[in-house]
Image 1 (cartoon, rainbow, N blue to C red):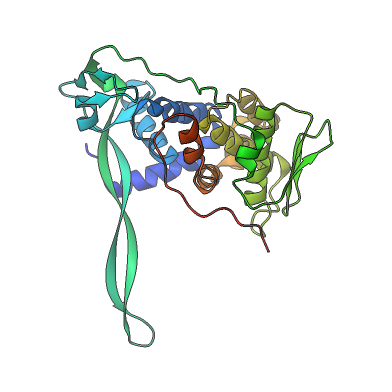
Image 2 (image 1 turned 90 degrees about the vertical axis):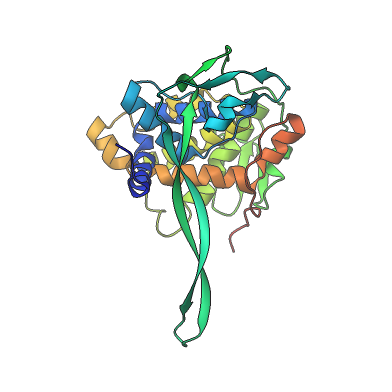
Length: 301
């Protein structure tokens, strides 16, 4: 039975809201984005979670690489290699959500006719690698070694940034600036910067500042994991760090604590990736698909 667009929207929200109750889901999502750098479109984290749920429900397998039907018919990798594969006969597409906008005319409070932009979603079909056949095709889940400098990352935001002399505390923020220890490796400094940037964006506003420490730390580290993985930094400590902050909770307590927070994590990771224009930075190192870009994150007044 086909899934309606409204059902897809509802399910996507449910999946994202509960994603932090299962830290291993973060790894599945980022692996698909890493694999897509071979010349495939990078779907949103929300859509990857949605497609993964559908394939798992049908086959008990997780997705590896997503593409529309036409892409699987004509695969050309970034190095120019052509791969001859096609969707298997009888396969049912996985449905994801694509946004679109339109304008409507309506009267305002003064009786004047004004235009309003409406955002809607439509269901579009994609297929996983496991639903195709043809030439051998190895999915590359490696994150790459791009040797970023700390300044290449931190200079992309207007938030005040400082190196710290602290040796035990890797980083911290007071909601006005970010500090990272100068006594750790560059890759660890970058991961820590993402962690503190997540705190800065998530936990210094009135509606969220009362969250308990485990929730705040888990959210910040999940964001750091997604952002660092996006630019090719392997951050093996993150899943263990995430589990450690909730180890005192049983499964029911963990679900209650974390349900609803996943959407904030994915939104914040996407915001950092786009606002810092990390895809452009990657393009300076290697050719990768680009994502949308936004204005730089501004310092709070």
